[in-house]
Amino acid sequence: MGVESFAFVPFPSPGQAFFTVGVCIFSYILLVLLYRLYLSPLAAFPGPKIAAATHLCEFYYDVIKRGQFVFKLREWHAKHGPIIRINPDEIHIYDADYLQSSVFTASSGKRREKYEVATRVFGAPQAAIATVDHDVHRMRRRAMGRFFSKENVRRVEPIIQTTLQRMFARMQDYRETGRPLTISLLYSAFTADVITEYAFAKSNNYLDMPDLNKKFFDMMVGVHEMGAAARYFKWMMPVLNSLPPWLVTKLNPGMREFFVFQEDMKGRIQEVKEKSEYYGTLTHKTVFHEILTSNIPAPEKTVDRLWQDAEIVSVAGTETTAWTLVVITYYLLADPEVLRRLRVELFTITEESVPWKRLEKLPYLTAIIQEGLRLSFGVTSRLVRTCPDEIVRYTNKGKIREIPAGTPISTTGPLYHLDSSIFSDPLRFRPERWLEQGQSLDRYLWSFSKGSRQCLGMNLAYAELYLCLFAVFRRYGGPGDQSPRMELFETSVEDVEFKYDLFVPYPKMESKGIRVVLKDD
Picture 1: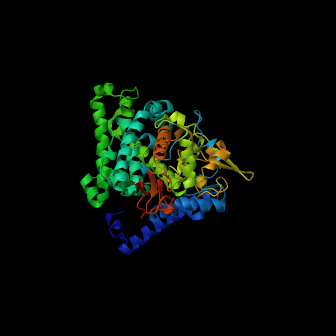
Picture 2: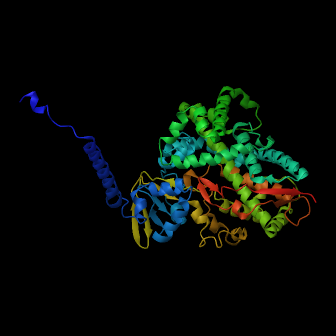
Picture 3: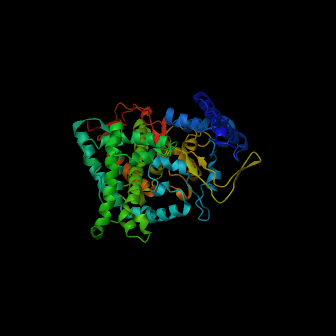
């Protein structure tokens, strides 16, 4: 056979090439859709077919519509029942009692892992909170966990008390001038200063800044929106982190503050490593000094890893606790009778400064904090776990559903917090519900998540809530009280209502925050 036999094989025209490629792409998409809808191990689970077929539905409500997917989940559960398929890979369960005995159990014999896709929102893959592997997470959590135990938090209550005095000094400035105070900024500065002093023995000192570092907290909206998008684009955060900060800042000027913050975290970890002898002179133990002197493996102590934990601890220890204080303050000032009842209880204690342990015994203050946690939500995004070693079985109306091992299984806190069958009149701030039913409601409070990956900073958050609310409302009354008093200023319930899920709750975007005036007359 001669070479000339192959010399005249015609090449396809551009039109034919495009047609062939198009047919291949169409065939691939069709096969993927057919598999997801009819052949996948999750194909038999109830839920919208469009959600089972593609992530685009979730992306549309989460990113395009800006944090609305959580509200869609409520609609789907109402239509399809307590267990539904919400995307091609994930099962969502709306059953608190079942989940706490299975997927979200704290049992040491059960391996529970994070879903890698869900961890992308943090942009910090080596942080403990974003660690997928069960055993690695347990090691990292253990290294930090003892510093957030109830016993250890009680030892450092003086940090909270000292920071409260600095906060009151700022409040006095506004009281003397009569200027409106954005108390949501004040509380954020307070919690930021507490967590950074606790973690590094070096406070951010936001309370000392004239504007309470408003630009930092404004910047966090954009960061959370970027995190929501990163869930769907695996390459997004690595690419952004690899770009020079000046270029990202040019594309998004609001990110400048974020890069300043990241560099500060890296610098603080480096400083802790280089000045280990300084630790012996401190008045209290700190999280990162102790981690660096612990016996965990050396790769766990690198600056490149620990700054990611530092970033998460600093942000998580600021936002959710501050927002809970904001929500509680709004509802107390909007309902003078609730505030009056609280102040009667607070004044049963004659001292102006008392330990957290004693405040926990005040029933109405405790009920107010629980109700505030319910309506401030904590994390509003889905909580996702995988069970790598076991098939998860869920029974509904006599039918057993088997979820394959390793399948992402999620639930969403706000669905429980706003469920009228659990909390009657759920949009109303009514602390009395916790006194009427007490412990029976605690299992439906998901503000700190549940199980072996529950929020690490829960005890510190509770200490701040008790100590801050006691100090503020023992000092300031509300409308109609004798001076000094605190009153809402150009603020409505829309400024605290949950409108957007950006991992944490946001009210209407045009909100100017919760503003108050402090009066003497």
